[in-house]
Image (cartoon, rainbow, N blue to C red; front, side, top):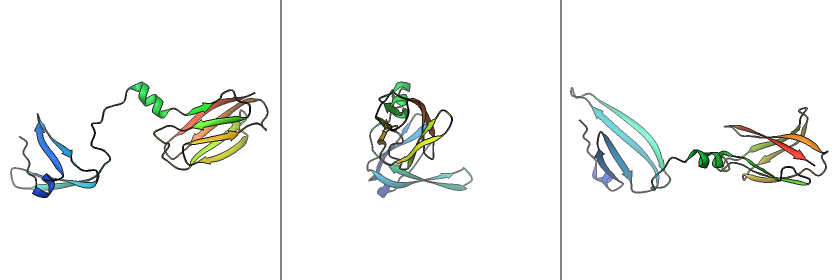
Length: 152
């Protein structure tokens, strides 16, 4: 069986109810909090678990579709093929991350340019590069993305 009790301080911060076999908590305010759970067995022994949480919004969260997730994760490089300028937009999910390293390489692996992207978007001047196929890499702590770029 499931049961719970809440202090009056906690009651001002959240709504709690039992839904089938689980306790559901809905936080009323945004911000940081610590979720503390104490479980007591029939012999009276108890364990306390503390979980730090950050409430960014109190709207319902829905799982994105695979198409939406792909859109959030995709790096946009345009125009491709390019002549003078290539615009690069980093994924929505990582655009808040600073220090994304952009590298443009020849097919032989020779580095043509390196740049650090801090705002999720940049334009690179490729007008001085010879025509051909190049490899563009974007790296951060979490992932590396590789794109083929054609310069006419």
